Image (cartoon, rainbow over all chains, first blue to last red; front, side, top):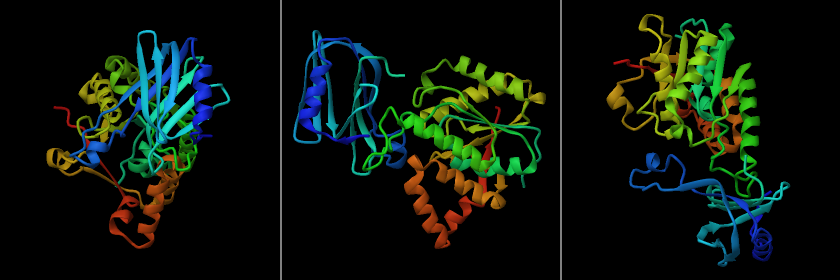
Length: 116
Length: 223
């Protein structure tokens, strides 16, 4: 189950995945109805599932909500607004940013096997 | 007045889409003895509501929503539920012709006299729009004289302005319990809505009562 982020634990998990091929799920969202509910709202978001990458270092920063950045040979992966984490029973690091109503705003996940 | 049908085929992209707009109609047809098939394209994998404290994460949400969909089907008395295996929020990026082929396959198999889906152009969510477009494409392959009727759900802000008032109004008063149970079944997404609706029903709020009395559709305009 998702728990509030323990920064030291998450840092250790991120380091455990370094220097090997891993699959990334990264997503930001305001929901599909944001503009329907408020026409002045500019709705943007992005989603990538199963990007296969290898990072040499990774770090969790901030005091909550947190930021996570992964440095690759040729670039970066970055997410912000992270509040919760879980090492699930399939050995995947699941991180999420939930707003005050419990709605997902950002998801950042790292796995050694592709996500289904 | 709900017209008699041979077979009703409901095609919607998300678990819970059926609950709000069609569950009373589905339950009413099943009570009449009319077979109903509900094809649900995705498992709502990209739903935002994970709870506070969270009850799910991105990877466990589809498992929860699948259970809820099965519970909703049971609440409506529906026995023919088809889960088509697409992914939430990606339907519009699929090959529309191939998606229409899948729907044509269902139409050929089931020979429905009525299909219910979202009205393309008036249904807000990109998955709703893409599903509606592909259903229209599949139904459009059938010559006009043999084509099943096509009822559409619309709720964009401009829908009544452009389409006029819904021409199909189903009185589902006798299925309000089933409809409430279908909405409740999708609790991961509907818990707040359900609580609010229950309070408004108790207070006799006309809009809330209307939701459990009537479901409205627009017959698709072919040209």
